[in-house]
Length: 211
Image 1 (cartoon, rainbow, N blue to C red):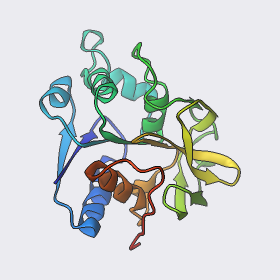
Image 2 (image 1 turned 60 degrees about the vertical axis):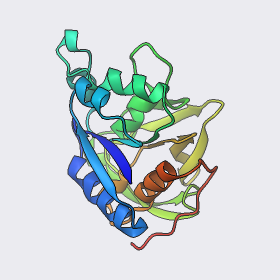
Image 3 (image 1 turned 90 degrees about the vertical axis):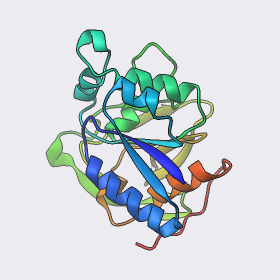
């Protein structure tokens, strides 16, 4: 069984639930999804894997920030948990921003710098078939007000490319994607999340998809 903690601050949370359910069905893996909204939810519910959906990173920092500043305390508690565990993590779009730039006084969860809204406004959103070395195949990328990786540091590898540009970065069991895999019918990255949470870490897993 895999227990996944899903941050419920903002973004396509229910699309992630659908993708996780489909991935678990494909793997024939019992799945429990814990909806995380507060600091207490993180503390009382240790999970094998975590998902940080997209949204608006500034709003997410305010809503999920420190309790003394009016937030739920979710993000500081989650970042602290991730720094002290080997849990598998998937961050999409704004979730990728939070992993690369947590702004909680601690080290980044993924050693890469990232520029939010780098592609422009909502009208500049687009779709593109990307190359995903992590999955050993192509993948339908959905980019909505997407951030852009500026540089990668030691310990970070490219997990997906749109042409010559990295759009997915992995460090250990933590994966940051600047696009939205949950908004497609291809559950390859969610299969990777559950598969990695169940077993020993691999450099690049070859994941087949039913989609």
